[in-house]
Image 1 (cartoon, rainbow, N blue to C red):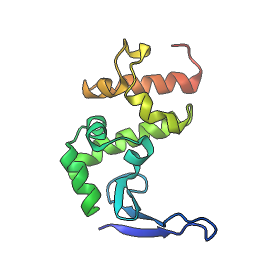
Image 2: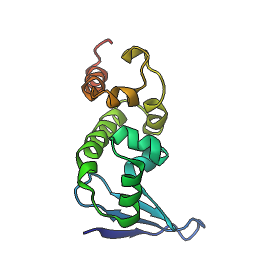
Image 3: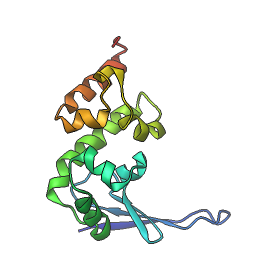
Amino acid sequence: MATKTRIVASPRKAKPAITVVRVNGLQGKGLIQLGKESRLELRDLLQMPRVVFGRVVNVSERTIAKVEAEAEQVEKLRRPYNEVYRLCEALSEVVDPDSLGGWFVAPNDAFDGLKPIEVIERGEIDRLWEMVFRLRSGMPG
């Protein structure tokens, strides 16, 4: 069952209120609702359309739409969402979190020219975690 938390904007600013809806089984806040639109927190952070985000978490665009509309966990989303969420938290310690969305879809020499999203699709997310380890420890690539 989802729990709602309402965050009210400052009275001086004319921004609409943001509502946070917790989705059981998913790390973080769950859903961010701004007016009638709701997005998974991680998709919102990465500023990705559903189809691209679906590639990152290995589920269909339809599955993401269902979770965002019904605020209920879909079991096949739980594990990959939580793993990518943790990866983004770790990456945010060493790079600007606002750059992560673009990073996932840009070719990267560290991965032989593959995009990080393609590395994930190949089932090689461990290569991304190794990069995080090297960045954290200061090891040269």
